[in-house]
Length: 522
Image 1 (cartoon, rainbow, N blue to C red):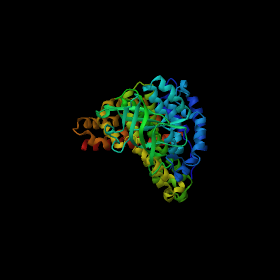
Image 2: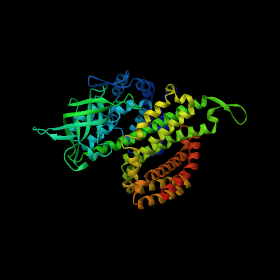
Image 3: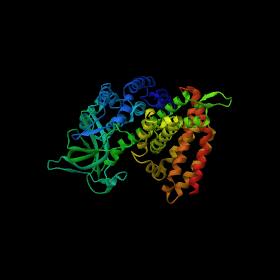
């Protein structure tokens, strides 16, 4: 088994390429120092839980979720080190670091143990939501226990009849005789809906306050101790150590966050953070799969080269191709996520953020699956064994293409409402091409523009969404590799970065043209 190695150097280089230096609070030295501390903790303490948690799973005992052995100790150490409050304001007990710093720890955490990262990962989004929509009194009471790790957070949206269509939510919030809001109803698929790591669970719940579809929804905080009951833990393909709970709210006392009827807008503050976090989960899995495949292939002697001498399997063209595909999913996907994060933090190109967020979610989560499958193939029979754990990478990564909006829904959105933000993406691509001198980017952009115009003029644009988004992903990756090529001399492994960039700068223009042709043929 290949031990987990945090790809810290690659992450820091990617943030540099994405322009993190233009953020007013960015400190490259501090990022390297904090990232190094977290990487060491993840490699030594978090990563060993991954296989153990997958084998043992969570269990429901007397109405409470019990986490696998070792998780409580590692969580306590993680919280004691101050990691839950990394991005919380100092006034509420946090370290006041930005989203770019969180991107470093989040990806490493996901690569070490996605299941535990899932349980802890919604806290930054909850804090961001409270900062934007909560009252000062709510912030003062709710953020400090989140920042200290005393509480962990959930995001309770989904119901049996309301998945992606939130207008169908039936869970109700009503005022009692004393004017207190109380929530009644069922929520399902709630990650970390209960656990025995933190003292309490803080639920952010979307509930109905009135008629009118999504306009009748409010966002509520349900604090620890309220009448919330776990009715079951779902049995899943992967992420066995992340409890996915069905929750029953039994007239649970709640506090309105923001305005009644404004719940969806408030919840999207948390959801948009979660979608980029999910994209980075995909990157983490792709990076892990690529590392396992590359390490195995470099030591596995099979067959002979053109000169008749024995060779390791990375010398065989098809194996080299698969390793390159896995590495490309991690490198290009990571850079696109970082470009979106830097733009989000800078606040100077919201349209680009709106376009890149769903695109990253689609590209990085599907890239993780391709990378895991490629790694299994590189390992051959060993890749099919639990011992080498590439099959766990595939199982754990599979959900990322489904949750936080299934990828097909994001594709449909990009082909319809997302058209309003497409010019910002085109401007970014053109700028990358001009600044890097990559002439192939401009040609590919022209092919994509023709496909986009065809989709925009179509009477059923969602019918073209799959091929349109595949064309867009190929163009985005081409721009990413133009940046990677331009910065290859500063990369942790310059030769590897240059070779990967050269390979995909040759291939991706043809991919853009092919997908654009499919769009126009529809």
